[in-house]
Length: 212
Ligand code: B12
Image 1: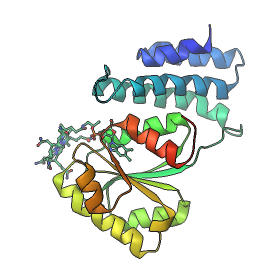
Image 2: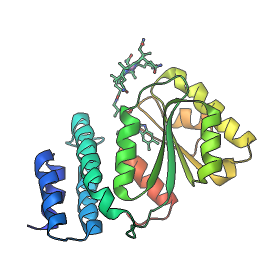
Image 3: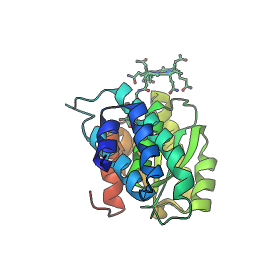
Image 4: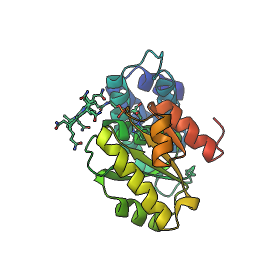
């Protein structure tokens, strides 16, 4: 059984098969980092098939995220202490007043699958919480999710608060959610906007100078 089968099973959303193969590979003393990489490849593939003109649906992305999470739960204890190099930290939260988390969580799962360390601030996140998290974690990238028209002002307010705390020069800000576009991006003062996770991962990799 090859590691490629794990990648394929993720792309095909074969939950039980993925978990069985991950356990089998661990039992046969496969390097957990290689197993993780196989999971990542599967996530990258299904992610690349989503978005505009893609053949993968939202429910598939959610499912892939869930399968990845479960595989990680099995792998994590074996990975602790091994040398998986994080590609960098990303802080993500849904802005104040907004409780939509489906898109945020998909983005988080896909960024984790790529190897980023993601700090999830949750939903309805006040500006101060973003600021505290930036001070504490020093991430190069901050992601804000928002699906409501009413989320635009809190995004602007949060980015202004980050500037007022003299932290704006230290972080790139990406906003996501179906309601975002270039006008919203300019208005709130973000560096980039996305309404599809695949583009978001590419932009963040580009910022962190990670080869795609
Ligand atoms: C599911 C849903 C809900 C669920 C949320 C469940 C949950 N746990 O998230 C529930 C029922 C709770 C809900 C509540 C409400 N909702 Co609602 N909801 C939706 C719905 C149907 C789908 C949203 C969704 O999950 N989309 C799928 C995800 C995957 O897409 P996405 O968020 O855009 O994310 C993708 C990308 O944008 C990107 N992404 C997203 N975030 C980020 C962040 C970063 C950093 C990156 C890199 C990428 C990224 O990655 C994702 C994958 O590609 C939309 C309809 C729609 N067309 O969007 C309405 C919608 C967003 N809701 C709406 C409204 C009005 C509400 C309510 C105010 C309703 C009410 N009267 O109570 C409340 C809001 C309460 C609040 N304070 O937030 C409106 C907003 C209208 C507007 N323009 O403001 C919409 C558009 C429906 C409509 N047509 O009226 N909602």
